Length: 105
Image 1 (spheres, rainbow, N blue to C red):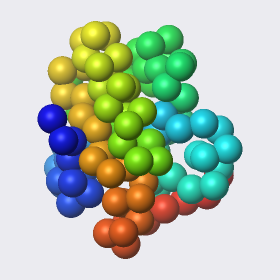
Image 2 (image 1 turned 90 degrees about the horizontal axis):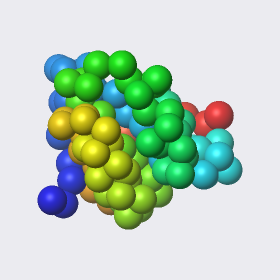
Image 3 (image 1 turned 45 degrees about the horizontal axis):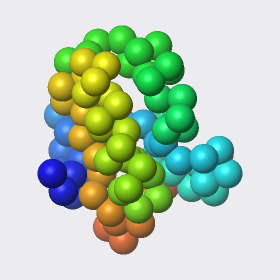
Image 4 (image 1 turned 180 degrees about the vertical axis):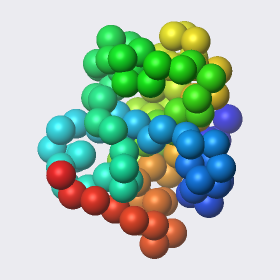
């Protein structure tokens, strides 16, 4: 699938308490990320996601710079049993383009 639009992501966060997980590198995360996102680099996702999000029914929105790594992250999360794992289409770029809040570490 193409992933979520920023507006769809915001709805999931507001209505379903979706957890946003940024799978970028530490440098990228520090430079800017979706407000409230947790940082778990893609290569640590399999190991660390179960500790970060205990309830596997919780929607998890994976974000990276452009949407490529977060798409891979969805596959990892679904393998772990997170059926509601989704990717933010276009990554942080599309989030910024929608004038949505970004934080720096």
